[in-house]
Image 1 (spheres, rainbow, N blue to C red):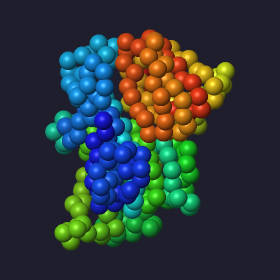
Image 2: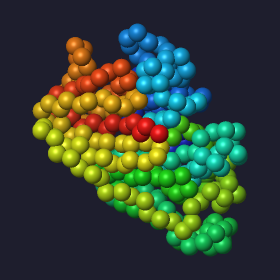
Image 3: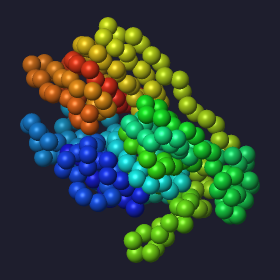
Image 4: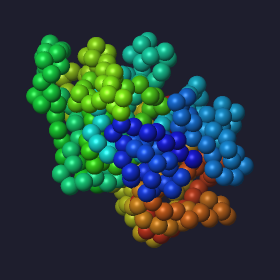
Length: 310
Ligand code: ZN
């Protein structure tokens, strides 16, 4: 069960995807979250009503006895009804010291939908710390920020330390570390409903921006399957994200601690042992370590996320 978050920049697309989404400018649906700022719950079966965090704490067998204090991932859908603030996230070591033991935040985006000529902000033009500080202090945002065009189906890897922002019109599936730490660098001088500017975190942002900017986009590795393709979009120390495009039937061996599945397009079925579930766009579920193998049938676009064995 997702946790919905109202945001100053939110839109109305999440209500179309999830009928139980509340009214208002909903910016985020946290689909899989064991973070204190929003717990997602199990909707059916033996663990109905339990939170992901409770399962992680008390039923580690579902996660193949994976070690670790915190469930490692958080997956959201973000609806940018307007531009999001220009921001940057710390890495693990900075967050641990400055944010009370939080994890850092490396994230990645799969573009579910966007308007024509959509763009994101990704990276900066400053070459060193001095140039960065100067451009920030003088508000030279156009000169500092890199704009990149996006289209549906694009995948963007955003390591901690990368200055970034989603812009109006983008609907994004975000896979990230289990963290809610954001340093806002620039918010377009926007005011909220009460007429207040949102807080900025200029000094922390200057501290954590990776310099010089390096474009870390990886080419997907594509494998042909009998009835479709499997693309490895990213394999990093924090998460692996794969996309399946299935037209027919596809049987997958489950050899992960856990697999988080998001149906991003099409219709079809999931079969796990003798249980069959109908799938359509927006559906999501976790395959536990106890599911040995599973198969998809139909015409489906699937994003799967997991973490590698240490
Ligand atoms: Zn971010």
